[in-house]
Length: 151
View 1 (spheres, helix red, strand yellow):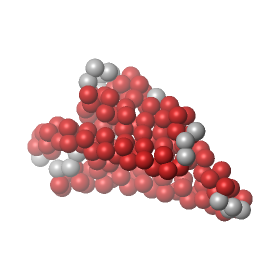
View 2 (cartoon, rainbow, N blue to C red):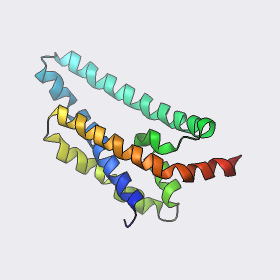
View 3 (cartoon, rainbow, N blue to C red):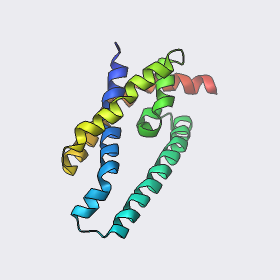
View 4 (cartoon, one colour):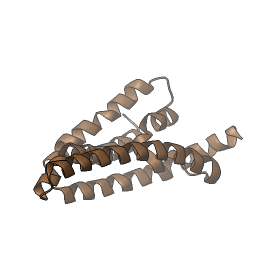
């Protein structure tokens, strides 16, 4: 908790995952407010879940491909890779404690952001993306060493 990396990951998770979870929790109500039928709302939730899975699966694969081919650090693909990034940045000795401490930001962010409008969620997601980008630049040197040692 004494490092900048910890707090960058925490804020990125609070903003990015918190807003995503708040949207997921309220997507049916959003559809209802837009006049969607119950069937359309169910379809919207199903599609959100399917694309959420594919995004998580695809970004894990993409992060490995881009890290090894282009040298891009994994934090560029942050949202589904938090356990991996946490272990690579902080090591595995206290990885469970560190990751779960950071993971508290997700429901906290969802709770805080659930009372705000959808446009504010988009703005907070953007801030989270900027923080993640700052963290990506900070972590570049570590990932350059990982790539050099794996070849």
